[in-house]
Amino acid sequence: MSEETNKIKLKVYRTNYNKKESPHYDEFEVSVKRWTTVLDALLDAKSYSDSSLGIRYSCRMASCGSCGMKINGKPRLACYTKISELNDQTIVCDPLPSFPRIRDLVTDFTEFFSHHKKIEPYIHNEKVPIEVVNKDDLVEFKQTPEDVDKYLQFSYCIKCGLCYSACPTVATDTKFPGPQALSQAYRYMADNRDSGESTRLDIIDDRHGIWRCHFAGSCSNVCPKGVDPALGIQLLKGHLIGITKNDKKIATLRSKEE
Amino acid sequence: MGIKSNSENNPSTGGDIKLKSGREGLMGWLNPTRYGWERVSYWLQRLTGVGLLIYFIGHIYETSSLVNGINAWNSMLELTQTTGGHIFLLLVIGASTFHTVNGLRLIFTESGIGIGRPGRPDYPYDATSLNYKQKSGIWVAMLLAAIAMLYGGMVMFGDVS
Amino acid sequence: MPLLKLRESQIMKIHYLTGICAVFFVAIHILFRLIMPFGQSLEFHNVVANYHNMYYVILLELILVFISIHGFNGLRIILIELKQNQWWESTITILVLAAMIGVVAYGTRTIIIGSQL
Image 1 (spheres, chains in turn orange, cyan, green):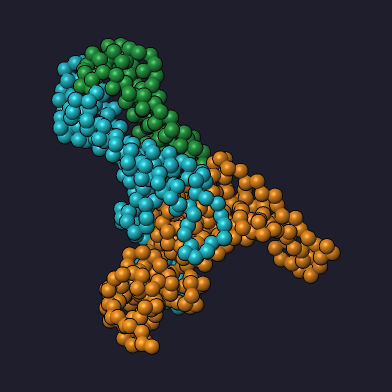
Image 2 (tube, helix red, strand yellow):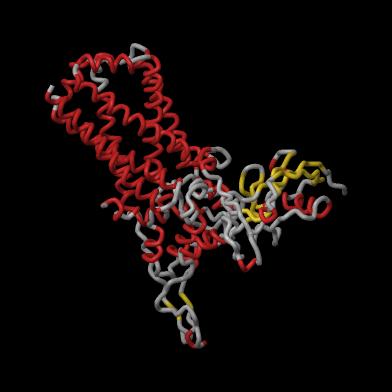
């Protein structure tokens, strides 16, 4: 059974700041089939046309978050975007906006990760040490499936950076943590194993913190995993401003004997 | 991945790696398309807000002409009660109606009301915060702004009082 | 500087409250223009007559205060998102506060003189 093939034009942003190359677009003609993704097309161009094409990718199944780029004007995962869904004969690939550019489609995630680290993305609980030295110290949190559902969708974040790219505040404000970090702040606040709410709220209640989000919704519009960062951020604002109360009870511990 | 941005040397990569900040800057704000209605409403809210602030300052200045007596007031009216002035006022009416209604919608949504609750995401991963209940608030704001502009136009250009 | 010591969440609460109050009072202000034919309501003696009404004067003063705070705080938010350094933020905060006070003072002057006409 032969699949129908179609030829499309792939325009890829090329530059190498290390070699002081000025930015330009290279065009490649690629044959695509019904299920061909943008990543497939880029790798085709890299394999048969220009092996110097710089692309970051890994899992090819929207699980690792490596292949984020701007495709036809919108941040998307290259492995998760089919050529056919773009309805265009010309596919333009640019590096992710709001990330420092290294080469071609590869961008630097250092600042993005540092924003994430600033909100202390780990469970704060005085009763449980961060490092378990003795096996007898191992305990288990009694967390029900209903408790997990309160934060589960935010834990699906793959740190692909699409939300950070789409955000209009990130476009100009270098100190703004971005939707990913703020939604992770909500993820830990909603997690009933965590008691670090006041610490995190102090961190984000800043001139360039959570209040520089204006619910433009672009983050949730581009998120490939259904994390819906805008939801987390607005719920967090509701807690900060005192309209909604965080009525979680900190999960109790089940010791080895139980 | 210890690459520093904005022309700093990075010893871990063994040389000068210069990076250009990829931030979209003001163009990231000015293009309201590509991301749905909420981005359009963000753009319009900012535009109308700045426009209304400028109008407010102008309005305080123009009404202060009454302290200089009836002649000064009438000169001000001659300047503002023109076709151009009325069209400008129509835009102000539209802007203030949109800014108000959308602002009320934002007060609710930014307090966590009307945007749904967290759940288990499933394909096609539609974001619950971008639901039609709060999105329709944007359309209502635009509709009310259009109606207000229509009524304002009838008052200023027509015989309606 | 008091504004610098306010938490951003407190500033946003003020921003929301002033916005809501401003809507209410501006609606009344606009309705006043419609109690007689629009053109007639703008005549000098009709405008000055409004300034002799104590409630109207209080209404105008409240509108001045609420909209100045809401509007200039909004401008401050937009401007601090554009550039991030200590000098820019301090300058913008001071200018915005000065503008708020300036506009309220100038408008109050009009109200006081108008009420004496």
